[in-house]
Amino acid sequence: MSVLLSAQDLQLAFGGVKAADGINLDVMEREFLAIIGPNGAGKTTFINMSTGHLRPQAGSITYQGRQVLGMKPRAIVRMGIARSFQLPQLFTEHTVLENAAMAVAAREGTFSAFRPLLRPAFRAEAEELLERFGLTAAAHQRADALNEGTRKLTDIAMAVAMKPRLLLMDEPTSGVAAADKMAVVETLARVLREAGVTAVFVEHDMDVVARIADRVAVWGQGRIVALGPPEQVLADPTVQRDVIGIQTGEVPHAAA
Ligand SMILES: Nc1ncnc2c1ncn2[C@@H]1O[C@H](COP(=O)(O)OP(=O)(O)OP(=O)(O)O)[C@@H](O)[C@H]1O
Image (cartoon, rainbow, N blue to C red; front, side, top):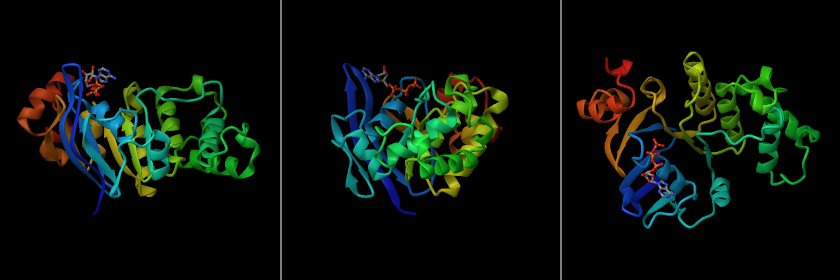
C-alpha cells in the first residue's frame, strides 16, 4: 500500500494553545483511519489543515507527493480530497435529490447554472448516488425534514459526488440516534470501500471505531500519542483511561 497523504511535523498554536504540536502521520491508500482523542486535542484542526481551511505555522502536508499547504480548499477538492462536516452543510430548502444533483453539478463546475435536476445526466448520477447510499426513499424529502442519520448520509453522498480519493469526515455519527448509528456506519463504509475511497474520520463512538477502522490514531494536546490497529489501541490501558474513559466511561466492545 502506498502513502496517500503525509503530514510532517505540523505546528499550529492559537495563542498559548498548541492545536498541533509536531503531528507526523502517513495515511495509506484505501485505509480507514479513525482519529480519536479528548475534546480540544486538535483533531478537527488536523482535518482543517489537510483541507486548506487552516494553515499550519510550520510543517508540511503532501498528497500523492504534492504539497497542499498554501492551496485553496477548492483546489484541494479538485486534487481528490473531500470532506464532510460535523454539522452537515446541506441546502436545507431543497430535497435530498436536489442536494445530490447540486453536488454533481458543482463537481462539473456548473453550480451557478441552477436547477441541476433539469440536466438528465446530473439527475441520473444523483439518483444512482442516492441508491448506493440507500437514500432513494428519502430522495424527495426536504433536507430540513431529515433525521440526523439520513442528513449525515446525504452530506457524505455529496462529498462522494466529488469523486474523491480521500474523504475526511468530522464525526460522521455525531447526533445520529443510537438505533440508527450502525446502519449509517455500515452504509458509508460499504459505499466508500466499493468506490476505493480512503477515509480519515474523527469519531467519539468506540464501537464505530472498532467496527470500521483499519487503524486508530489517538490525539492528545496537539500530538499523536498512539497509533495502530483498533484491537491494540483500544485495549491500551492509557488510551482507555485518558481517552475512552473521559469520553464515554465505557470500555468498547473491541477491548472487552
Ligand atoms: N480558529 C481557532 N481559533 C482559536 N482557537 C482555536 C481555533 N480552532 C481551534 N482552536 C483551539 O485549538 C484547540 C484544538 O481544537 P480542535 O477543534 O482541533 O479540537 P478537537 O480535538 O477537534 O476537539 P472536539 O473533540 O471538541 O471537536 C482547542 O483548544 C480549540 O479551542
